[in-house]
Length: 115
Image (cartoon, rainbow, N blue to C red; front, side, top):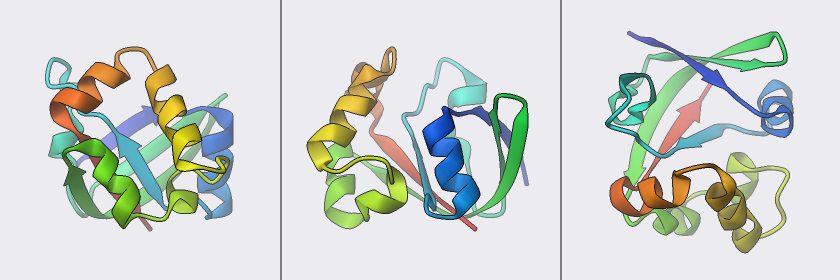
């Protein structure tokens, strides 16, 4: 079992805290071991950090989607990004993170199921 510490923005933190966000998604980054989320496994712990507050969740499953946009065909958007209203809005959010577009296209996206 491994513990992962993840900085997260306030809207996503609120979704995890309320229990509405049950799937965390990450683009793997093999050049950085602390961000190579292909290594996340069932039973690992994710510690989400936002503005000095922490929430710990257990990983109940992991799935790689490559091509990454297939995730939207299999997962409920409200469990991934409760604050978004559409698939296109979610894609724009992903593309807004530095380096994410390239990593998504090259490595796919990891859906991490939380308990």
